[in-house]
Length: 323
Image (tube, rainbow, N blue to C red; front, side, top):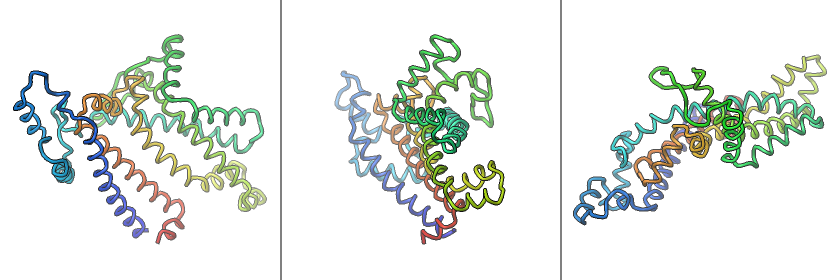
């Protein structure tokens, strides 16, 4: 187990290093922020001074080495637009995105598991067919369209939920959260439902397929033949053996939801890191874009590492087979 975890940690560090190269040079290919910052009246000497102040007058390879050295020290540079450390801006907005993603994951699990179990146990019933059609719809319909339809239906016509903003928040250990207030839950409902649909569809299809396969296994027949209650057969024996693919996919899906909640946050004006990224791209704020991308890459690598460790806990054969 320890050898397996150490190997995965070393692989994660290597992946992080490679991704810093790709991200840094990829961002520096896109445009020149100086063109947006300086006015038409700025002389060449003025432009040169601004470039020197921002560190853009050095060769790209030298900028990367400086960036890498600062990264090792935990410094991802100052935002060109705000003049403050880029990571401080990300940490300021991240709780809102994490709260939205967590709410979406909870909705997907609370609704997805019961629906998928019903679809797996009674695959030919009309309700099961409707559930599978719903899951296909979740994969097929664009997120932005779903968000707009929810706003038009539940905000504009019915007036049940607010369309934009995060609502009232309270501080928990210095972190503002909205789900602990009624107004915050009111604002959280529509964006969380919108963001949860892809994860909900994934949970339904994965769990249903795994359950249909497991129910034909010998150990399930043996448990039933020995008079084990059906709820225990399904809830313990069957579900335990389909957890690995569900944990894997949901781990990656959760990271994707955090990283790519840009569309949902833009539609609902949710003050998270996704909306901040859109604003940073519009002004070519390189340090802020870089900090966000490095943050996302690190998050995916850590999530992948956690999933690998959970693999070895749920199924010890995984750790032994990796030797």
